Image 1: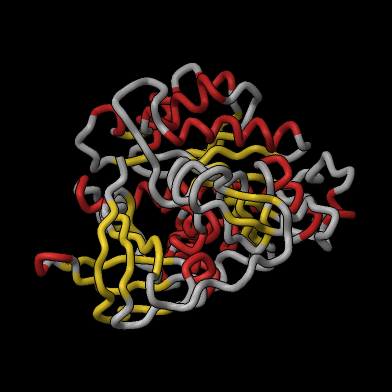
Image 2 (image 1 turned 90 degrees about the vertical axis):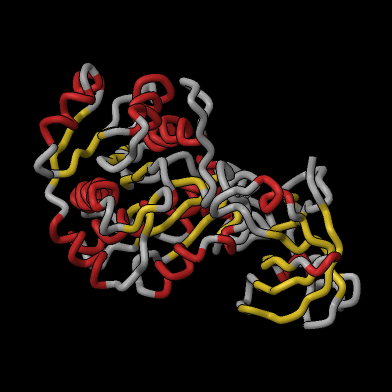
Length: 358
């Protein structure tokens, strides 16, 4: 069950257009940092009494172990609902309306009215949110002028505003446009599902390459099927169904002590074996351990097209952006292979962009 506590805002730590971070004093002299979304919360100021969801703190979660502002008891309420009749997070206390790209009132409606194709656009499906900028760096290094779109599914965090990574990736020019699908919200384009999200990125935002991944907060268990990233296979199939080119980004780590995640993670292998029913491009980074990675793919090498790609140029570009990247708590320097796999996938996707796109 969720845990809610009332406290008082002592100071505003950071204030952005779509996210606010504050320090809250809780009863008994405790304090915590909490995050809120102004569009849903309204303005927050020191001295305001607030209700905080402390569930993540109580559970001792890692990156999710923060407080979230539920309500400001003293501040001005958020603005009246804006345009749009599509409700995300339906039938919860946080349901919110958006103007979906597919709606008749949207400027994008006509472009999407009969869209069932993405015109050969390459789609890179990731199993980790942290790999998104690295995929983009691979695309950018290979094809500097490409327009890169990111589609965030609702497999992890629902507000795109929660992703500092995407905010910074846009700021340094790695990502040009964002879309949010399902119950995820806050993208440049709001869309109803992965299929229409891909169509919106191509037909409305004119993306040359799409990167698809859940938001921060991927879930995993020790079971065969109990993990968020199994959606990777479904995304690859969606890309193929829409006439796109499906590219699988491997989750690779030589630092993870868990056997199921050593080399190529079982998350990727299961998504490619069980969830992905169509043939896709599986990109292996050119590393000293490449032969070991190819061996791990086993019979998947017959089911899918396998490409070995040098990530060097994209890795150089990625490091040059100054982005501080980490995966599962490990910085890029400790797990360069994780990001090299993503860069290689982006590089490969850039080479697949049809000349007719743009």
